[in-house]
Length: 248
View 1 (cartoon, rainbow, N blue to C red):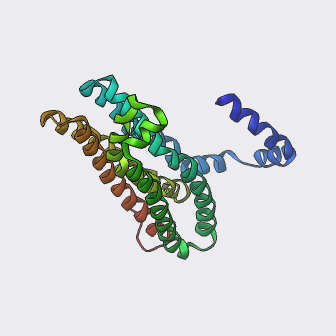
View 2 (cartoon, helix red, strand yellow):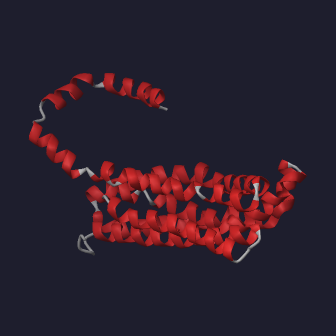
View 3 (cartoon, rainbow, N blue to C red):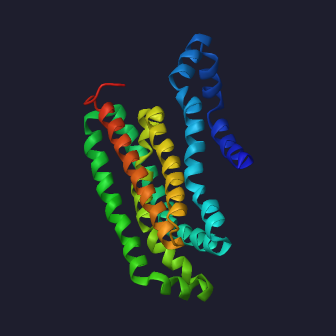
């Protein structure tokens, strides 16, 4: 990963090396300190925020394995990976386009940020319904046909995971607003709530002796709540950028 990104940066640096080094030499130490102070949240807040986000995404798998065994964990992992494929293939492309457009509006026409955010939300909701409909129609028979009879259980869990995957497809591309509009501190609210909801749902499933399907559905609904919180956080960040809300 490091080598790949490094090799990718070399041509960019060589393309305008004189301009780049000239710009760096023209910067004073005080100017550099101001820039670092302005963007310090990317490191100080973004690092623990990213760690919590990763924990919330991957913690359910070992919890399922510990409570229901490796087979159920395998079904869970496959079902979730299949459902998250649209978020990777389609959501990332939309996220890149959303990021670029949002940056332009934030710099040139901040009054249009709210409208653009709502339009992107409606588009993502529409796109999220399409893979959900396919999974509902195919169900476990679709997983059996594609992956084999041993993986039919993944189809059952995939239906329970649909709310989580749909919410992720809708909200994840919109999360670029955090980086464009500077909302790292507000994002911590979502990160903490997501981890807490995973733990609470797992504990509730164990205490109430739920089946694996019921436990996965509970986890899925818990993540929907977390993404709903995240959406409200993003909405507040956008509103603040348009000047409709004061900074905290």
